[in-house]
Amino acid sequence: MSEEHGMTAAPNLPLGPLTLDDVTALAAADDQHRFELAEGNLIVMPPGTWRHNEIGGLLFAWLLSHGFRGRINLNSGIQTADDNRSGRIPDLMVTKDPAPRGAVWLEAAALLLAVEVVSPGSERTDRWLKPVEYAEVGIEHFWRVEPDDMVLRFQLVDGAYKEIGREPLDELLAGEVPELG
Image (cartoon, rainbow, N blue to C red; front, side, top):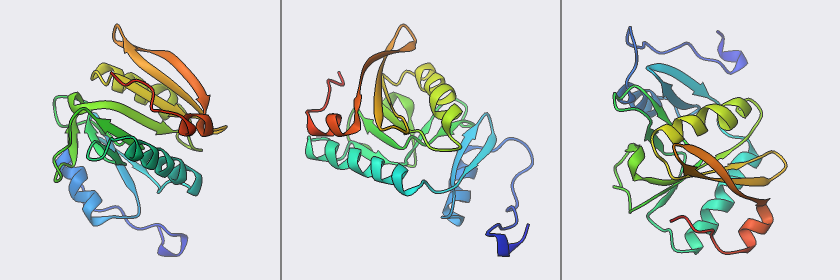
């Protein structure tokens, strides 16, 4: 891989499955990518697009203005298995209680809401893989923002997400925060 194409050589990674600690160290050395871990396998993602980041920022500001300070964050990690070999980074998350300031990978039990913004290259992951993983670890609410700015809201019912609402992003942002339990 050459530098002229914007690619760099892969870092020295441990042999065998990675842990969330490995990913944390890797992310500290590389601010050009986002990293997730699925069963010890590294997933590398480019930075979000302008639209992707703007939507995350709008939702963050809206939730902040509605009393969620200390409980919301963008692109923070959640552990999605008990074995330290799986972790995802929702585009936005809301915790049940204020999160520790030094936290890198929160336990899924701490989350109330995970939000994903569907972008080119993340469609299947955001629509099919992440909701299943989030449901399996018991995150009560999941929202997905589609490319047409439609926000689909889901709630965990009997171990799976059930759609409970959908509205255009602008309508959602113009109103109060829907009940999160």
